[in-house]
Length: 214
Image (cartoon, rainbow, N blue to C red; front, side, top):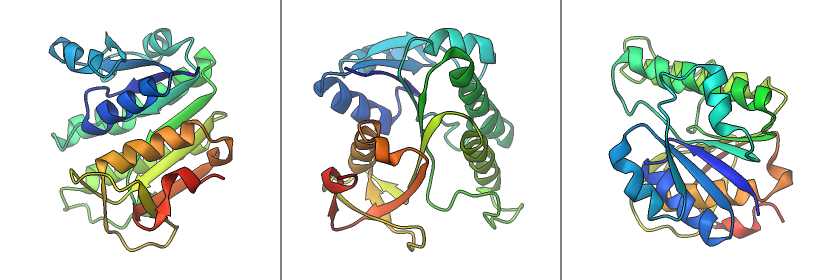
């Protein structure tokens, strides 16, 4: 049994992931900002904890995640103001990485997006710019940390039923992938030491997720 804490526990991917993990016998804690979301999280089998990481200090985040084996970052500002995007997707994510290091959580899985990198090429006048900047900074901070990290780079997300199969590559053209399959990939990498230190960019495709790290 692995002890896993999901940050952003009420997101669509996070709820699917929590269900997969608890069904597999893991102990899952899901952090939510809104107390009204606790019942939805509890329905997945995870333990809901109210913790607004946007407002918590590094040490306070560390207090919440201490004792877990894995942090999964699945939080986001959800296209809010630029200020909140930086506050959540960059600053809070970076604090959570530092908190994992300080509190001795060895493993960290970041849900990012396909194409996230410091030279992302998104123009400053594009509404996506602040998100691209934020994810690039957080991802790079994670890569430079001492954690056993994996970064997931799914393409455009859909609510279609999962297929259980994807295509992986560093030079893929962006397509789409169901959130079901993103959750399945996140669950798979938690179980796969071979995924440590990898940035995994993916679309829907022909390779069974169960075969990714054989």
